[in-house]
Length: 328
View (cartoon, rainbow, N blue to C red):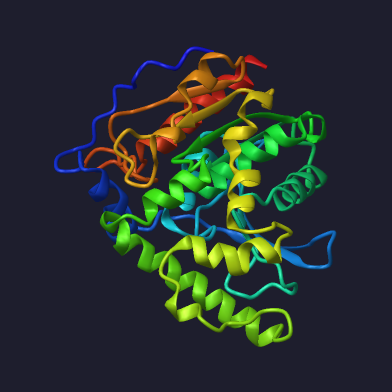
């Protein structure tokens, strides 16, 4: 599938800066008005997942979208809420998935979440389908939630339920080792401090619960992802080390195997993404991957115009997904 033409998206002044697009929505966007209903699911491995339902008020709905958030996020951050609100207005029921340890309560097992988790997404899809006769299911992922989504679709295509018609992902660090290197650069040190603060707190809680398994020694000296992933993420989730984790969980390896229409939106000014996270050649050789590279957007930014409640990313996802299911 040829790479899609550059979209006619230009944010209002002064948000043609990738860093401003990344920071401003988090700090200053008004929290989208929604009415999420929390549900707790038991997982096959004896743990739990918390999900937030958003029901559409547009009559009989047989479409379900499942939204996966980014690193150190949750289903009630502004960007998943904005997407949920816009999709419910467009005729979808929505589930916002909260990754393990991200719903406000520590999960029960030593494992938590990481960029390559796919079993939890499958659990949520199956649960959503069990609640109602949904004819169409769509997946929406942001950042590492996008990486999880792409990996899920490509690693075992035969296991993806037939009701899953398409996916949209934004700002995906699909080549993890390269993205980690970019995030470790000096210009991203402010973001890194924020992410590491949350990750360190999760390990402190895990160490208190599993003192024989998790050693917090040296945790406070970890300032970047690689040593953290080497000591904690990799061994807790069955990987040899950080390099093994990055190699096996990078969704770029799974893109050629995706069978359903998938829109991947990577802003050219994203401060978190290296060149390897713009898989132009793979998109050109794929019948399912649609790669769109707007000039602006930052990392999970994509602001709308002044006075617009919906962001460009939310409108773009709704147009793509509704086109898929209407043609189905």
